[in-house]
Image 1 (spheres, rainbow, N blue to C red):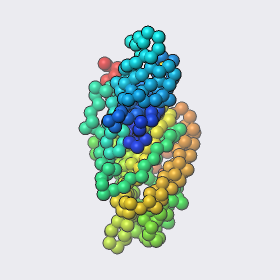
Image 2 (tube, protein in one colour):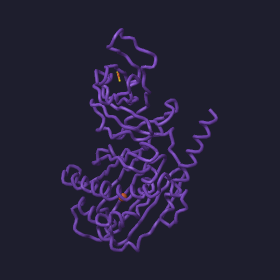
Image 3 (cartoon, rainbow, N blue to C red):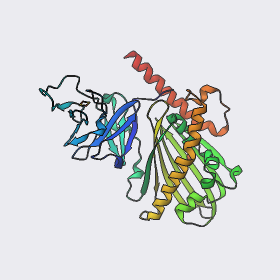
Length: 344
Ligand code: FES
Ligand SMILES: [Fe+2]
């Protein structure tokens, strides 16, 4: 399986893109992102067509970017608008691709395929990120594993009990109940652990003592690699949420075997409390960089060149129900796109 092209992927969190050019490889394409003087985001090819220096090493001149090597300047449409050398001639090959980008919910979304087909109405709704009643702490890491392996990980939150045991483990995991739902091209999986202890990562965020309650981990997947989750810890008697957070887990293939992982945790309580921000950052560093990443990357190495566990005849267990469905949906869409491409 490779990746779907005609769909929206995250290129960056909005605060990563500034007047300093940002070079990033997305879907095997070298791209440079920057903001125009009016704040709008530009995404064009990063490889200078002259001697192939990365434009991201260059400087912005107004709304154009100047190559660091011989000073050709390109505008936001990828056209060369200045050659400061020799006769100043601009040859027809002096251009780079331009990509469709849209900034929404503090994220820069990028259309991976034919710009003509880009429809902003298809951008996933992550409006909770910018809801004034919430606060979101974000991050981005690069991972040496296919993006699909991360989808598997994020849909199936049963891994939390093992990979994140010191952070999210409970002492009655055997009581966990699993529910998987599929509607159209979206998959939901809900794990409920009644009368659980409040896990340490959640205690760090809530500041609560070790109360017992109902721990509910709900994950939602949609095309192509957008996983959002809703984590709640509910008081066992009143069902009041002692903790509630919304997680954004957004994967963009860098190549077939490497990916960008953009994450965020959105909360509705203690919005201005910097200590909570720091507790979330500590959880992100521990959970995503020190716990998930090593095990997923190691599994990827064990799989060699294969990126699809289902092609390797795996043992399937009940908690795979959601990720098997997601893979099937994605595979079908990719196959359809490849068929349409070959007919065009
Ligand atoms: S490599 Fe860019 S101007 Fe020469
Ligand atoms: Fe994890």
